[in-house]
Image 1 (cartoon, chains in turn orange, blue):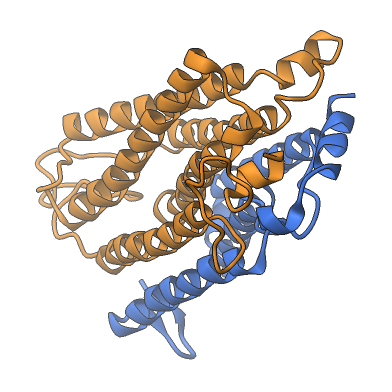
Image 2 (spheres, rainbow over the protein chains, first blue to last red; image 1 turned 180 degrees about the vertical axis):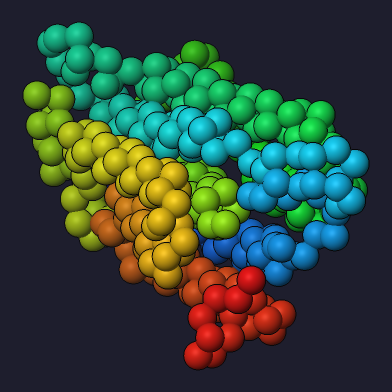
Length: 229
Length: 121
């Protein structure tokens, strides 16, 4: 079976497991795009809820403004930590780079190994999958730190409208990142067990599309929640 | 060069079956895209710390435009939507347009946006 046919899963499968589709495209890839489309609407509902409640909290802490008595028992500074979130945003962006390099490495796994450290490194799917997973876990670490510090400063999901909508939105996103990391770890397990070949590129592509979607959702959240006052 | 191998590889791919309408980017393009995304993020954070710009009317539109550029860059290059079959584009952009329209409609409905008055607090 040709590499392209393996990626699409629509042609000359010797086991007859993947009959040709009416679109000529791989059903799994079409399904992940449809899933991502539905996820757009999920996150749109969460983002619009956050934006509608923005500035309507009766008590503090507040995202961008200081909170003084009587709205807060003690004076509190603005709660969002932009430097920390900027760092976590950078980490997630770099994880997308690692993910796309992992996919390219799998797609080119049947090519002769090039000379030189750099080109050989680019061809290591294990390296880039590990890199993506580690960067994803690092992002989750930043989020855990942020959530913990917010709770210590008096903001929980029950404190005010900001807390409810913020923790729901970013918590859902964090859950998606966690699912993505687990997906990456399963790919790594397959890679260690038998090696990822070009015929597996479609499965890596599905994980990559999901991972990049999680990244673009964070791009929107970073601007709408953290930067716009 | 490693990215030359990528060219060689993609030349042997059955594009129709894969849903690929144009060649996928090379490794060097992926690195350049990452650099652009990083630079835009730096600019976003940088303008956040300029009080006079934050107070101006251009602050929110600038951030929204920069964010949209980052969003589009990831979708077009890393998710390969620029290169893949148009059906994938339709399946993604349709719900995305509905989602964005919903956000804007709800902001109007709850008084955060007003026609002729711009953004309200």
